[in-house]
Length: 193
Image (cartoon, rainbow, N blue to C red; front, top):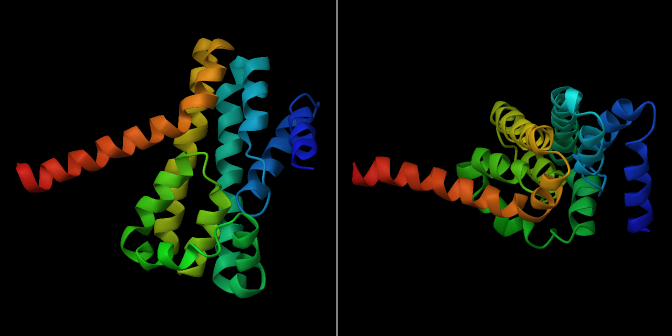
């Protein structure tokens, strides 16, 4: 069933109203839908590289708006809906351990996982469930989701089809490396200098 959903989502990228569908997929992926918007973003940018920034902006905007829906599901309906969604993705049992450090590191958690292929809906619902400050959530979401989609669109715009496999294979590793370097810089600034 997941493969059929993936194929259907991919087919929307060729639809005359693809940007409309991209906004919808980006929105629902941030709270409940299992297929990431990259499935549409990549072929859409490859088909029309001149519109790469517009396509990335649609992804970013609607992903953050959908993230707010996920946040409110966690905040107001965690026991009714949010917990069920986390269990569906296999993160229900891990949630308690995860939520313990969330208030201290919540903004960084949203920023980090918003960049990675990790299911963003888990982060949005968790952020609401632990009542992460809404402004922190929004800022971290805007920065990370925009960085992710604009980076992918920019690479596709610059390099075209050859960069597609690289993005799909190494996006997660590159994100981890970026955060290791970022945290390493903070450690050096705080404890070494």
